[in-house]
Each structure stands twice: as structure tokens, then as C-alpha cells.
Length: 171
Image 1 (spheres, rainbow, N blue to C red):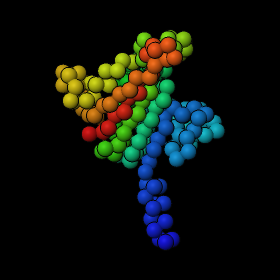
Image 2 (cartoon, helix red, strand yellow):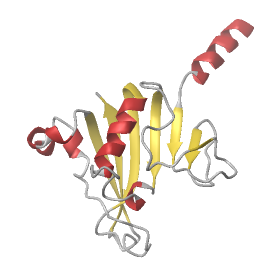
Image 3 (cartoon, rainbow, N blue to C red):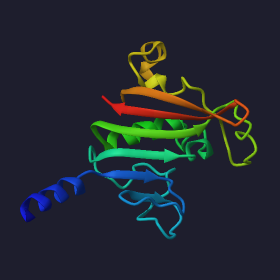
Image 4 (cartoon, rainbow, N blue to C red):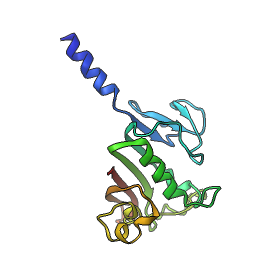
């Protein structure tokens, strides 16, 4: 019985979940990453600086909740930040690993209230990484990193678009 429990625990520990830009909301069972050293943060790292402090192909799950809309359009070397960010997550994920990104929809009434928001997103914004979509087929050259992309749209109380949640499976 003890050996079975120990091997079960070991297999659970081998699942790496990363919460990027966690702020003070660190999550149990995750490696919590933020640029400010505060309670709940396990790894202090500025997400504007590539590469992130993780080896290739180690993560089963990466999430970024309400962070990407704050990031600049371009890196210091003039590359698209959102594309470079997704590329970096692809590098860290195992094949079959999942990247979950929540961002405000461009029509959300909350998108432009926060003065630090740089952009809102559309339901199709991550289709560029999915070779099964028209945008992925036509503009797949944006990135060699491929995902199967599912998405959800949350609504405000009055039915307006609120957030887009991308669930991206590394191919």
C-alpha cells in the first residue's frame, strides 16, 4: 500500500503546472511566476525577458490569466510580443501540453478601462497557430509552433463580450 501511494505521489509530482504572471494570487500545485517578489511567487522573472527560466518540454500546463493584454506589441528586437510569447510557451510545454490564456475580448466594456491594457483579443486571434484553421493555413508562417486551439467567450451580465479563453494543445 505504501509503495502504491508513493508511486502515485511521484507521478503527481512529475506533472508541471506553471502560472505565468500570477501576481499575489499564487495557485496551489503550480509553479507561480511573477516579476515582483511577493507572497505566493515561486519564481521571480519578468515575462518581457526571453527565455523564461524553464527547460524545453517540461511543462504539462501553462496558464496566463489577465496578463497578455498588458504586454507590449513588440519585443526590444522588434518581433511581435504575443507571437514570441506563444513560441516561448510552446518551447516549455511537453507535446500534448496545454496553454491556457485568458484575455479581454476587444468589445468588452472592461478592455479599455485599465490604462495599462495594450489590446483586446478576438476569438480567432490564436487561430494563427492552428494549422486546421483558415488563418493557420494562410498565415502559418508567423510561427513554426503549432497548437490545436479551442476557445470560449465569457459574457458580461448584460450579454456583452467579456473575456476570451484560449485552450491551446501543443502539437
